[in-house]
Amino acid sequence: MSEARSTRATASRPTRWGSGLVALGLGVSAVVGMQRAVSSQFHDDGIYLATAESIATGQGYRHASLPTTPAQTKYPPLYSLVLAGVWRIAPESPANIPWLKGTSVASLILVVLLAAVLGRQVLGPGLGPPLLALLVGASPLVFPFTDYALTELPFLALCLAALVLAPGRDGDASSGRAIGLGVVCGLALLVRQAALPLVGAGVLCFALRRRWRSLALFVATAAAFLAPWLAFKAAHGAAVSNPLLAYYTAYEPSVVELALGDPALGLQILLANVYYLWTALDLALYLTYVPAARILVYPVLLIGLWRLFRRPQAFLPAFAILYTLLVLLWPWHPARYAIPLAPILPLAVLVGTRALARRLAPESSRSTGERRARAALPWLPALLLVLMAGGWLSTFVRQVPGTTRMAFLARLPYDWRGFEETAAWIGANTAPDAVLATAYDPLYYLRTGRRGVRPWLHRPWTYFYPVGDPTPDLGTAEEIQPALEELGVTHLLVDPLDGYLEAEAAFELFRDLLASYDAPRYSDPPRLVFVSSDSLHRVYELPRTRVDETGGAGPP
Image (cartoon, rainbow, N blue to C red; front, side):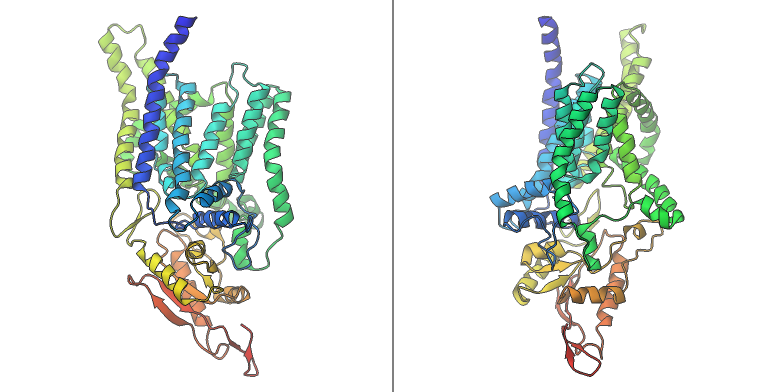
């Protein structure tokens, strides 16, 4: 018995060392490739940072960057609390940006190590676990989010932890494991409400085994984490009256809700999301960049998925199916939301590779050379993925002067200096109580202390659908101008919006808004008061005195 344990420990040592080296290499690559001055580029990351600053400075869990500072009832609080802890240690903004982004780098390292553990559970010791760790951590769907303070990587880490803890076939649906899984799922719910499929998978897994005590413990544990957040939402989740604030305080309606009013729209979104999800998962395997490789990879992937979903452990297929349904039924491009599914694909490729190798090179093969040759052949798709991972990663982390990198391999044709110049001008030339209308309101709040709001209505079901021909609807100047006045907006900022599908519609709306401040309703037209050195950023001062019907000055 001791000899067997010693043999297993010796066999697992290369697995642990290999996985550790992969985690270290990817972590160093993330730090080297980090854009240390860039933040709030996604807008969502700016909201997390502004909320974290609010917590760290004692203002509470609220949107301190908005004019009315409403409570933050949209995003669960755990990640903001982590960022707030970092903020307390490094309070100087924007110098603390690398430290705040470091939470995502740390999450990636955890993702890599957990992927290796999952690989060992499914594939056994050897080369498979570190290979899976590399393919997951370096994935174009995963690695780019090391450069943003977003929940993508912490959420992925918790999803992988749940997959690792999920009960298997060896009688391990114990009370302790149920509580541990409940803790992980509860924490995931406090990072993203999209963790509900994890809970659903856990319920299904314990119910199929008829482990009712474990099921009760699991649900009670997850609920204990979720209950305080639901209580906070109930206490502070009153509907906002200003339509521009709805985006910040509540989620958009689901496809089901939209379909009740317009079945054709609901079907259009669902079918488009199927296509978008396929492209996202295709990207997770690097195949978007080398389409011809699909010929080798897809057959092996399908074999692996079939074998994975036939395993006695029901948690992984249940989570994959439930989470896929959630993504498909949300009116938003699935690329970011598909990240928790990313590890399943390379795992399936490796499972399929191992199955083919055993089929092509059985122990009864006539010669050792023939058996080795046949065994090596199925590993070509996995080797191809490793080569693509190295090539993609080296391209992504490379810094290119005069550009700003976005997710995946997109590079914007300008650097970050224009944003810094604009923020510096606002800080020096506007009153502390100035209110900004800008697509990057958290960014300017964090750098200047001026509150702001996005000057358009949030209707994402018009941004991405139909595929290839969307018509973003951001509202009209007639709808938005009164909302801006209600919030006391004093300046309109026009910044580059490369990477946003609603960019063209936003610029048209900005033009209409500026034109709407016309005589005789306003005493003066908007004034262009600043243009950045690259001519991409403009600041307009909006008139604050409205002329009433009798010719007297009315309130703004």
